[in-house]
Picture (cartoon, rainbow, N blue to C red):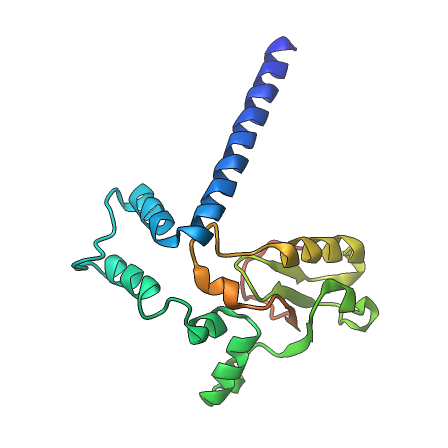
Length: 187
């Protein structure tokens, strides 16, 4: 029993350390994005980004990120899951879009009873902020809205030093559920 408590304390301490590291990385990503990007790059590729004379594609992409694409409205619009739909339509490709059910400024605007039995909710201002609902009758409206509220408060992009996300006004898009697309998990 004593060993189990020690392991739990050790796990909790590691978890707290990871949370602190994530917060530091997020702050670094917002305020020192070039430094944070190089840090993450070095962790993954075991070398620094060559900003002065980029040869590799990865280096060239990072140079674009902090040069041509820095604070670029179009880059932000293309990352925004709502605004990118307008771009796709302007390109004459509306038929490739997953049909939209609704857009919301907050989770409170969602009228649960008006949603179909299957749908997907996505926050537009980040990555992985998706809720796949295969059976609405087995899903908790309260839990779904709580998760959306949590995500809507998040300022995505700091942790990954993707500063174009700060130009995106958070919103929620509801799309039709398309069987066979995306991951197979979810509610």
